[in-house]
Length: 127
Image 1 (cartoon, rainbow, N blue to C red):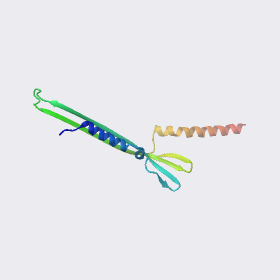
Image 2: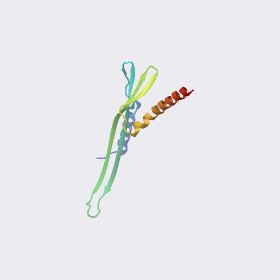
Image 3: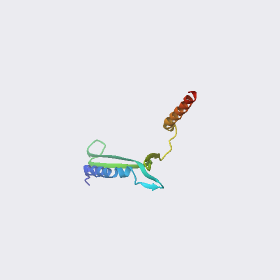
């Protein structure tokens, strides 16, 4: 059985090109009341292949010829969140809650803004 490894790789590459497109990453939008929601998905593919040939007559290894090939692949999809629009406003809603230090860093801009507002209020009271 002769296997054309180059043709197999070409077919797998063509498949990846057709599957990894924006419609796969950004899902179909839908309406939720006055909101328009667009799902965002993380999409990943992996591919590995290899082949080999051999000719026997090595001591203690037997005699003969051999050819071997193999290929494997995997696909992963994970929901990331939603792009949500309402009139002229747009926001991103993550699908998972962040915990730990990442969540703390996400709150820093809000904390700075609240601190600055408080500081401005004190300064106005002193004038």
